[in-house]
Image (cartoon, rainbow, N blue to C red; front, side, top):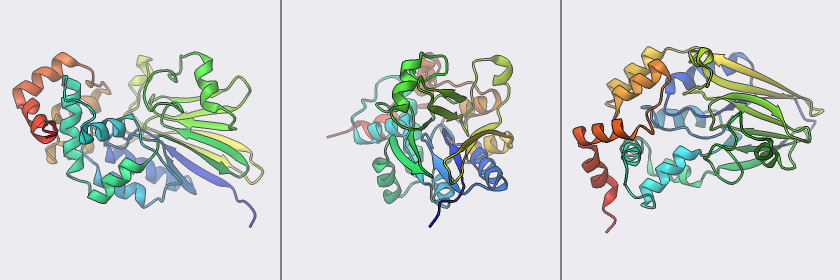
Length: 281
């Protein structure tokens, strides 16, 4: 059977934000996409877990990767990450919250997903990663970083797609291969203040015709941020006030050790995290 034109919705970094994902999927339908690829970081710090899995499962993604946040969740759950430091306690509380929504089978599927994979579409070889080929986290592929890291991601593929940085990007490798980041569905970012004000949900569409000719379209989709905040508060999300701040401003608190340390002590999250994951005897 002859190849047909493929229109792939390229999604990354939902971070628990179901309202944004719903808006992006509706927009993708309106754009006539034929496939969905997800590049990792589906969960945390937002309130949704099972709902996000159901939305993606209904799309039968051709690529479904883990991100560094899934990696952190798995390490906390299996005991390889000691519960030391305010950020780890923060992640532990949110991991417990998400795990309660997921079935045992769904959690096993999370554990089995890779951080990187390769696909071939209409003659194009495409490497898909959450970040680099070697690690799902780190800053080597932030847009302002030197060229060698991008060349390593591309390798011998025609096209490389990745997430993690939360910024939309398209650039060539040194050899002319294409590297694309669709930005973040649930937590967009820009270091430029004027663009950071725009908190619409990001994604991209790859169009690949039967001859392997490629077009890339970046999309930004408005969604009801107040509805997402209401979802978090109604669901008793841990750190719901911090999530409200994130949604209203785009500003993260993940590495604010002083703030998280104070909140963890005041709300008993240090003890709760130890009770949930600390006893490995």
